[in-house]
Image 1: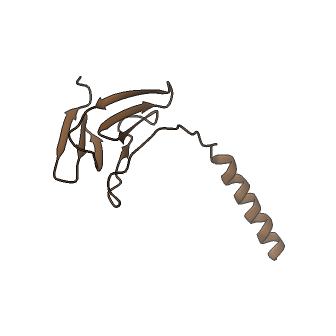
Image 2: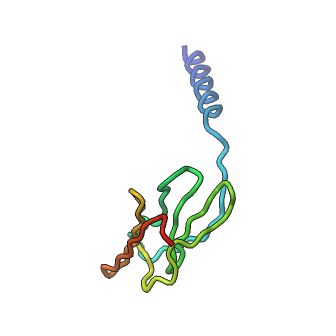
Length: 106
């Protein structure tokens, strides 16, 4: 009976590997400004784009075109949290700093 169980487990494992796509790696530099607060990456629109923090800027990276766009630059603080929803992007700092802007605005 244990032999049957092992073969069923192997079949299930093979099915899982079949369904799991090969991961794609996109090298981007992120900075962590606080040892606990690490909410510094988000995917607001599609699975082809993610937004992340690098030093005192917020960037968007398109995984399809492999291009980076600066959404917020030269912030007066280093963001420790980031969120995007309903067409808005918000970045917050350690000392109650907050920058909010519309995603489609320049």
